[in-house]
Image (cartoon, rainbow, N blue to C red; front, side, top):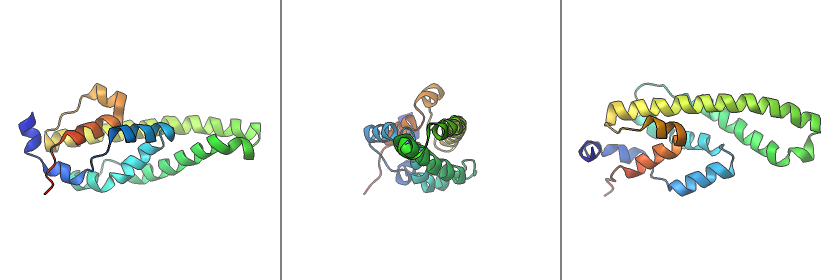
Length: 148
């Protein structure tokens, strides 16, 4: 397996190695909204190796903005909105969160397919389901660096 990964070192040139601890902390602080930021920051890297346009970055842009709006409302909504307004927004937030999770898993498993097809980098589907971007970043951080 190590040989298969080292034969495809150019994968590490495209993806930034990020500190996994920082990624987890940012995701928890932002209540998951940072996941969208991770996808948007990785867009060029994903598009450079992925010839099939199977991840919708326009949707990720929309979902990231809406996630941060809901996060802002979560933090400061009591100062601006009535109880009825907050209750209304909570119902929309539930619908949004399920859609966000659907987009997340769709995108994560498309990334898995691309990694396995083009780079012989195998990802455990169960770990991927539980840890999503954290597991992908962990695996990307393990790819040997070819920096000069």
